[in-house]
Amino acid sequence: MSVSEKTRRALKEFGLTEYEAKVYVSLVESGTQAASGLSRTASIPYSKIYEILGNLERKGWVETEQGRPSKYYPKAPSTALESSRARLETTLKSSQADAMEELQPLYEKKGVREKPDIWIVRGQNNILDKIRETLGRTSRELFVAMPVAPDPIVSIALPILGLMKEKGIKVSVMVPQSTSRETLRKLKTLVQVRTREQMFGGGIISDDDQIIILLGEDPLKGLTLAISSDHIGLVRFGKSYFEYLWESSKPFT
Image 1 (cartoon, one colour):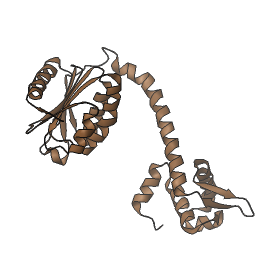
Image 2 (cartoon, helix red, strand yellow):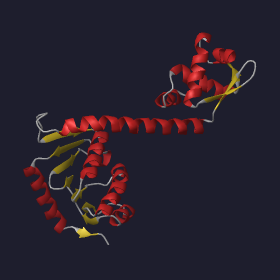
Image 3 (tube, helix red, strand yellow):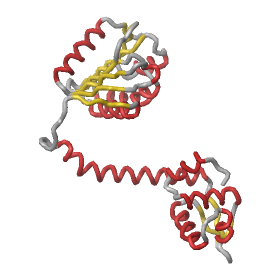
Image 4 (cartoon, helix red, strand yellow):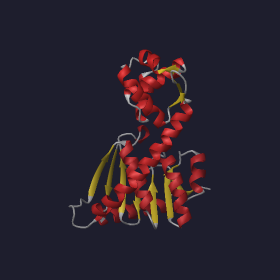
């Protein structure tokens, strides 16, 4: 197979087995083939080729041209990938709903587990997930202080901030003066925005009951560590400090 390892991995992410990926790529490279020819060009045992072709047909990657012998041809990669993506999303949404229906009440049930006051969150993806979760749970008021406004966070935040505006949730966002005017304009259409010349830390406070403190040796290199807490004392301290900084910050106009 002449395609790269990256492409082979991608096909597996879309639900193809190693043999199925080999057969599909062979069809893309060589065009319509009979099962016997595919067995040779894709280096697949002949005893397995019909099973693999049947699987690919059911998954929407190949079609059959009737004849003696039958021949098989690949669907366009754009079509096959898009239909597979849609099926995977539908399956995941259904599975998510099934799991949430039973597991979330168990998770939230009081007395099931000893709940800590403070969590350490490591890694940018995990931190972004925690931010997304906190924004999605907010129902009344949100304070955000960002020492930098990296694109991953802005991209995640804007659609959620739009929903918050529709729900009437009060959102106050404080960012450094170095933030691009384009980003500031986008934020200003959705929330109250102020800027500061210097910011020595960042965080998010949601509904007076949840705080995320964002840490990292160099914020420009991405978020590396965060502290998440629902400790009422820490949340109140964080809110008081935010309000102090907010009063001395400059509204964006």
